[in-house]
Length: 314
Image 1 (cartoon, rainbow, N blue to C red):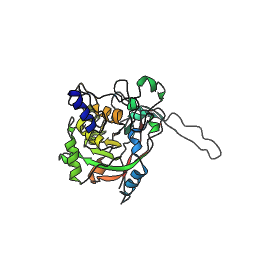
Image 2: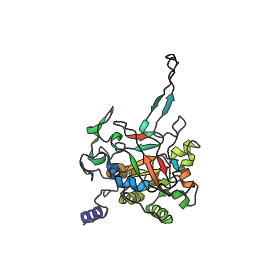
Image 3: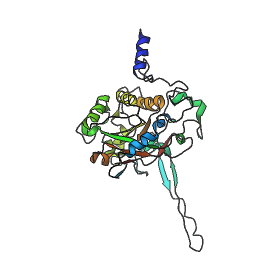
Image 4: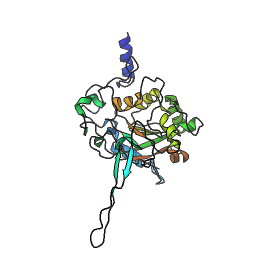
């Protein structure tokens, strides 16, 4: 009887495995991507010409919002990451016009510092990553031979902002607050919005107000979406979820023995991207809840993620 119940749940959830019977995420089977056994782009395949045209129609004022943070040595850094930039030397003036040039040397975990896109090679379940790729088969000291961020392409799609802080009548949600599926539904209903397949869903928690103000508190945890909210977003067939915190999902989570399960659900199982450490303050203040979204990740061959400056346009 138990196997029938799980089979029924599998079908209800659209054939996408979410949780095993012990509540831990299941590894994706090799070649399980709906876009084919060779797919390395995941939900980026939802970036169709139709989504681009849908996004363009939302531009009414021509107002551009920068969602990216500045990169410097003072940014909050988690997991032992670092950011060091120097100007190593100035070349001697050359030519009759005495041209002189400068350049920078940056030492950092480039794809996983500051505003960052989590690529499909960033998080796995045990030895297995998106589309069933096994860790020993594609991870090398010089980069990934599969699922590198160079495969992602450009995002141009409809974006929606869900202001959960305002929904809860707060400037900033508390550390450890789990955003639920009901929270997302209420935020959508409050603005008369629906999520469309291929959308970018941006969540404002207010946690970003701590950026370079109280880095210690910022890094110590965060409000964010939980497993139920992730299932809701997966069911909407989105392309990407972003937030004004460092890891999208609630931390600490409800079970201290289960670490970052939302990352595994979105990236590993579904190929849905995370966009982290965003500046959502102005967008929330101006109550811009529907916009054209644009982001072009750097083509860093074999990298797990990409920095950048995503933009919202209304």
